[in-house]
Length: 122
Picture: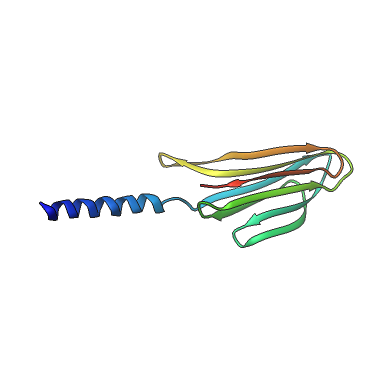
């Protein structure tokens, strides 16, 4: 009887460990777009560290992050007018189907304004 309980406990722990380690990676897409502006100065987190770039709009990049990662996107309007939007999307899988869902999004309007979004994915 002890042997059966030990085997059952071992299987329970093994299956539990499989469930706990199946958290990610997460596919994250950063998007920046604007109206009345064509360039933005960006700062964003990648799996390798922080990146800074001046880009032409619209702009987007995708990265794969492990669960628990901090993701961050900041976009500054490079014009003295217009609106800029920063957005983070995450790929979601339910019942074998995957789609991209907006997770964080913010818009700022005016000259040289900054739109920033961030969060921890888990």
